[in-house]
Length: 467
Ligand code: FAD
Image (cartoon, rainbow, N blue to C red; front, side, top):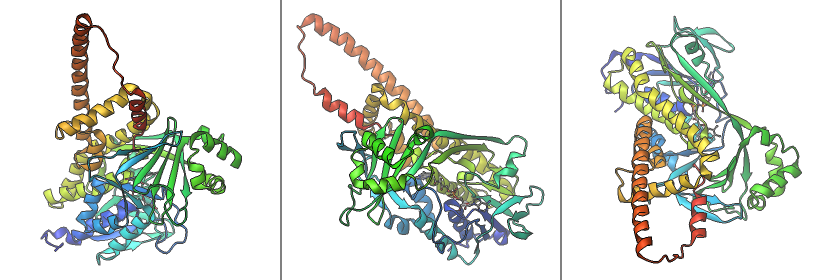
């Protein structure tokens, strides 16, 4: 039973502004606690709309997001429509493909259709009698004094006991926060943009192996492809805007792909490629960090409104879903007293929101700069090896982020700690081998071992991707 609390706050009204991924999930959380929930979404009902404008067509769902869905009984429905991806599949320039597992056996991430997920969340929200979905309600402003909200095309002001800002990276709710003293805010656009290209099925079957996240790492450029239930792949090309600007004609698209992603041309089809490339202009990517996440006992920011991040860790939605879980845990601890819950939420969640935004940005830089460093690739191997022999002490960064609910800021701390330990260990090993080697060189005549360096190198090259 969900109505198990005796608190008088039950009849309080919670306004969730933004009926996207995080907003709808959040609405379910508040409804489950017995609040009267009003969701205000600027778009029409996407379940009826023909064209759904939005961001990436599919998304990676992992542990944190799944745990949050599980709490409202949605995990199974959502994962049944997801495609498990156990490994990355790295496409080298010469067309060879090499898989790299995401974690241990049985650990995988899921490719999820964004529009379908949003629809499922809307329908789930609709099953609660105490949730009201208000479409075509675009919030213009709200008053920090009275809490009253004003909407585009609606004259009357609407009041709620709590406003939950889930209105995404360009949050209108957040605008009022910017006027407050001691509110920190930063927003960074990266020089890369992205565009999406569909890879159709071939003879009714997936054009590539479906249970992988395919990656074509090319230093400053990168293409990834995620499978869809209709046997298409959704390819996303990430590239600096100035490079996009150079590709101005269909012929140049083919030339560009010929040079960097030749194996993808026959799979996508030259004509489709030329068409998809110019369907939409390349989209920008923004990272947003702020604090606090709350205003008094009136308003709280969640999801992208609080921490939009670049998509290179596949964590934006997962972190936003986890926000709902974290707030819910605090609501339990502090008896739904908003004046205590909201500051505590800020205290707990800001370090984590900032840590994952930083990690996502780190991965973006890692992709461009560090992947060429032999030392970096060597270290990835060492980390994975150590994880096998000391699974509790040494945990690869990706594993902590993707397959655990370790708080993001603790993930960063542990990562720095193990980095130091491993580097010192390696230094020690190097010193011992230099000393030992020198001794052996003096003692015995040298002989060259026959190490298959090429084989090792091609494996290391394959680790060039952050995903
Ligand atoms: P949004 O999804 O932006 O939803 C906000 C909602 O608020 C929308 O419905 C909007 O219409 C509504 N709204 C906006 N303004 C108003 C207003 N003034 N009044 C009323 N309503 C309003 N995350 C992952 O976890 N895994 C991934 O693999 C992944 N891949 C990504 C790939 C790309 C290319 C991009 C750009 C992002 C990716 N993300 C991924 C991040 C993910 O998309 C976001 O973190 C997630 O959508 C955030 O959800 P949200 O509900 O907070 O915001």
